[in-house]
Length: 86
Image (cartoon, rainbow, N blue to C red; front, side):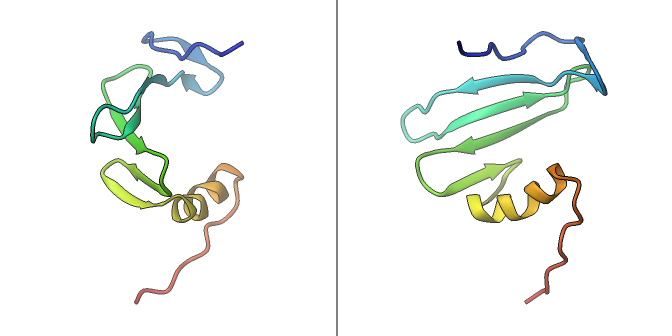
């Protein structure tokens, strides 16, 4: 059974308020997206994704692998490796 996404404001969770999430399907040339809002205020972030190997998070586009290299260590509580500037 598919879990229903949280869209109600002010629901508490273990470490604060739950995120509110909307999933929008692809329309025409606009990619599918996740709209994620803070649980107790109006802050939000949009994540655009598609069938290609590209994600746009908060207006910053990069390959899925680039995002994985940055975000997965944070989610695993590991230190992010510093990268050399070109």
